[in-house]
Image 1 (cartoon, rainbow, N blue to C red):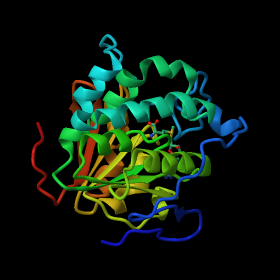
Image 2: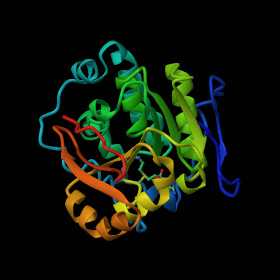
Image 3: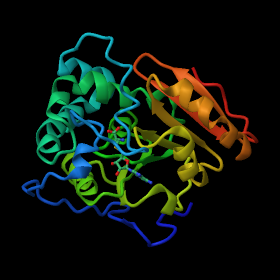
Image 4: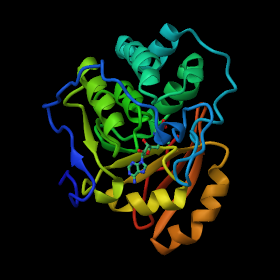
Length: 268
Ligand SMILES: C[S@@+](CC[C@H](N)C(=O)[O-])C[C@H]1O[C@@H](n2cnc3c(N)ncnc32)[C@H](O)[C@@H]1O
């Protein structure tokens, strides 16, 4: 299976296979407009397609659970790694402007549990391509929850991809997890599962990613807007020969999209 940038126009792989270099954490980051557009920042003024965490806005129902317990529940034997990732999000992630400080108190419920909710939907041993990973969501929690799954984190922005590389190195997740700097449209890396959260409205997201799952599926974490986005995207999906359904899970609402010619097994 070919993995790599389709064109070199905007992206390059930062790391592949086992070779992952870890930049230092001390890098200073200047606030800029892209930070304000981040879904995790307090006052997003997002451009269309970079909307607030639209996969996370329906998961605030449960009371907070202590981090250690939540990590054991989500990541089992990798609970320590889950805690280390959460610490990194809450420290460097905030310092680098990848996550809003107000998110720190609800990291587990709103972000890690929401992301890990995809784990039961991914086939054994699958290759997963997480588009627009940002600070690693949902790709890193998914990788922690499913050690036998291969996860490629795809992120075009330099600062975010550096953060991802450093987290992968710190947690010792290579070669299970690799980081690609680039845009979905520029990749040629078919995967069994493509994941995305808060990257773009469904129609645009599918337009960017449909070449990545010719024999697989897209799992788009969407919140309350799932039904409306799916309705709006239906004509495009029909034109592209794609089927879709909404899966309502405990911690997430997911739009699943797959080629109509594939008989995809019904998931729990
Ligand atoms: C709003 S953030 C969401 C980050 C993360 N998925 C989350 O849920 O916290 C959207 C991310 O998508 C990335 N992105 C935007 N357009 C993209 C594209 N065409 N291909 C891949 N990533 C893209 C942005 O750089 C940004 O990091």
